[in-house]
Length: 346
Image (cartoon, rainbow, N blue to C red):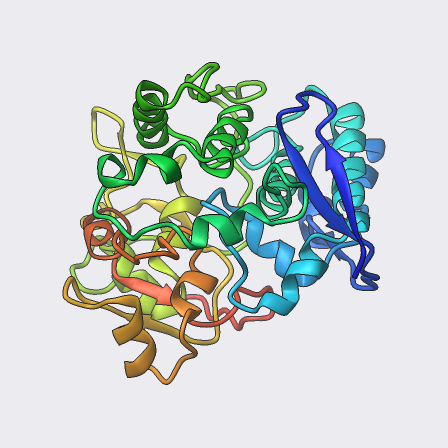
């Protein structure tokens, strides 16, 4: 399938290989019900509701994460279809123009499309030969315990350095202080690693008084009764959710007199929580589990844990156990979908 080399207009450092794959599927980033609930001008709703011409797999890029090679290699030419990147770029441009000044779901309106577009760009990034996808290069790196153990040739490779530069250049990537520390180390060892290292702030801030939008439209008020809804894990088990998705969907929630972020291990009573979209198959795990052991125990495909839970490190699964205290112990083993059945608590 023919590839089309594209250079980022804003910075010629970044190059991508997009394909001419025909992709007939489309999807909307905001549902009709969601749009109906928004108090924004019609022109903004029209822009938000416009469909993007991308394969359904791209919807998994809604949350910032390190973008690796799709577990099914046949998806790569569809994810990297030039029509998808162009469609997402057009969506972002239209929403930026027509919804400027309005904030939605505790973020600026372009966030869903901009995060997906960044996911496509990182997935389709190519080596300096203009042909080899960088993920293919990175996938063959030596497995090490920490970045300071990486062979210098891999640490300073074109793809590794450019990936960090690309993530740093936008507020819509997974780049955070952890990646900043890694990039500072890379710069200390690699003459070709230059440029800023700061974590980019949001494109524009959301007023603290704004009421965040619950994408699913489904909320609960906790009772504080231990074992029922006092933890993300318990709620996730009751409603068939990923506990991490529950945590991320409620990043705006502050509890306690000092306004602490949501504590997934101990949620006070009378805390209103947004329930994210559920998944038809989910599973609990323990600190001793690995992605592989979860998949085997639950008759899932190898790779499903990282595939359906983009926050999980797809290379080593090493962040699974340490995350339990913060985001709970339940993962999805199927797609999060709007079609799940919601039964309000009695």
